[in-house]
Length: 366
Image (tube, rainbow, N blue to C red; front, side, top):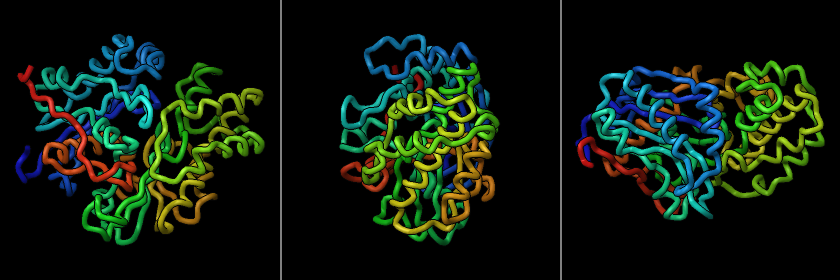
């Protein structure tokens, strides 16, 4: 366990969009954000991305050796480039997520990473939550609570992460702790960038619809959108979570559309899923702050601005870094784990009680 002094923690995130690894330094005591530090990003090469994509859906015990080599090598490269860390939060790469079935699988070896970096590494953040009946995701909400305090929010605010999957955190900053009743509500809204990325990769060989340029040329197919919204997931009460490929049907729904119309329709699906999810919030937030790659898609942002009854802005509007927020979150959560503080609670993952996840690997312990 750590003492009470602030810690410089380095968090890393490789999301389901498979774009690359983010790393960011944060100074925190596990409850407050004291300062933000250096950050770095390393994009996956086409070959690395293909190796990771080939392992999606794999569980523990299956052959993921090539993917593990990529995850360990790229994370080590990125994290070694940032000095000053006393602790590292290592999320790994999610390959499969079925919390009420086979569990959850984040590929990575914290022990090996601790040896390579020479500092303690907190990893395997999700397993304890799942073991206690939780969804295991999303895990950033406790950090979002600290962010709401850091920006001095006085009324409820929402953080919307548009990564491979979309997730929403409603925060009441008037509460004192994130696990306090009424402080948080968090859940996955639906698919976001992952299926759009898969579409443009399959049809055009690109890694994403950069700046929404393809979607901007298209027309939304309302029939496909209506079929998408019939999915049972949208009728399920939050908290709730998704696997990256739970909505693989999206590609089938746009199969007959041209490239631009397909991209526009899938973008509308992601945005509409958020609109449906907002109906679950205890009250209308004063603003929705958007993080993740989706905030750089003008088509998606415009759909959200038109469809939601409150201001929608990128998190940069309040001085946060939307590219690094997830990485910063796992640095923050690493400190909470090391201090024995909870990292999820019933209102964020439906876990039975507030629980702290994560294992701590120390260099030289093997």
